[in-house]
Length: 173
Image (cartoon, rainbow, N blue to C red; front, side, top):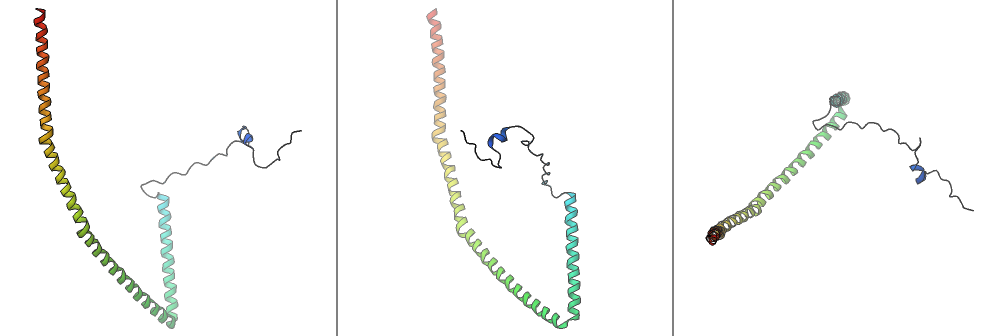
């Protein structure tokens, strides 16, 4: 007696190969068009503009509500003013530190250009001049004599070919 494997809810590999109404894939929705490289579409631009208008309106409403609240509560207004002054002082201090860091970075960049890049450029220029001299030397002392020798050999082979042709004519006579 052959035992049957336990039934499972997962489809067997042989079941996926049999054609039937359950084996057909579900129709897929068409892929959305790829965004163009030129920018957002007209509908997207309209949505962006509407969103920006809503944000501006909310900010204005918040500013009006805060102003109304602060006008009616002078003690709170004084506290908010003091906090705002402290915030501005901390921001000015932060901007000053950032400017000092920027100046130090500019000094480091200037030093780098002066002490490291300039010698590299000078060494590269020297190498180019050496290659130019080597090319000129090889052209004058190697290439030209070899070309002259090749032309002499070609001329000599033509003379020999002509002489052998003439020698063949004289033998026949």
